[in-house]
Length: 123
Image (cartoon, rainbow, N blue to C red; front, top):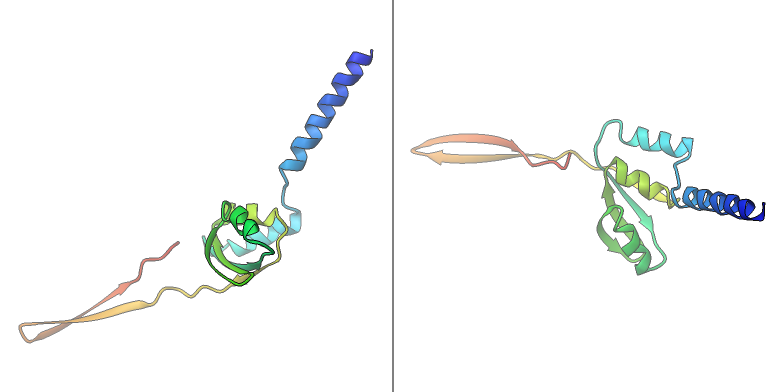
């Protein structure tokens, strides 16, 4: 009887610990993620950190673009951002402008031609 109780307690502890390590987004967090990614594939954002070790850990989840003091600027796709949100970090979404068109002019044998190209996007 005691042996069965120990086994049941061990299984219960194992199940609880696995649920704690695999955090899920709350309904409101998932709605925010879905809303952010409804019209774009990448989100640019900033957040504050307390230490360089914290940056190293987060850099394994999202793409860190630069740091300025305690402020970190990063971007992420939906899966990466969802994982970042699991850490409950405060963040600010940074609007990202669409790439500008580039116009070039070329003169050949007295004729001028123009060519408009789009810069590559990260979408």
